[in-house]
Image 1 (cartoon, rainbow, N blue to C red):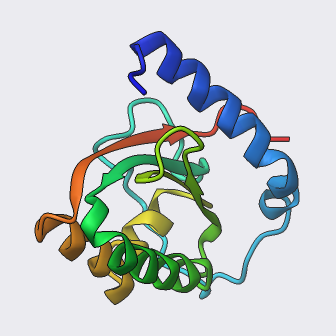
Image 2: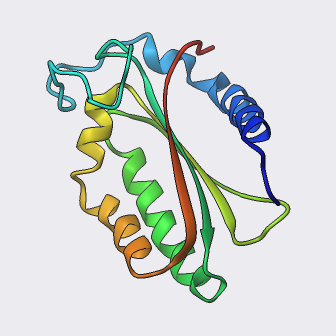
Length: 150
């Protein structure tokens, strides 16, 4: 399935709307100050977001068919361990109905500091190493700031 830029934008908006419904309460309670790393500086990739703005990453990945079993084991571990991180609100792994080796990851974090913390964890390297070893045909990440969460 080939997506135009407009189709991809509409898809991402729809996906975020569908997925964000149950997480509204995650942003109403403040976690203990020591529960995750915080930062006083904004990530250099964020243009207008306040430091405490929720941060989401949407990844579209096409997996090499002969690496599927390895991928599924790795991504299950990565998602499970990421969900344990204090700044992670959710980590969903979705498989395309049109292409069995195409996946979407929806990762929502309380702020940019939480994603920085995530990238320092050993389970994050499972995905990075899988990509580096040629396990993906393609992988595109979309970094987003929350505008409206329900």
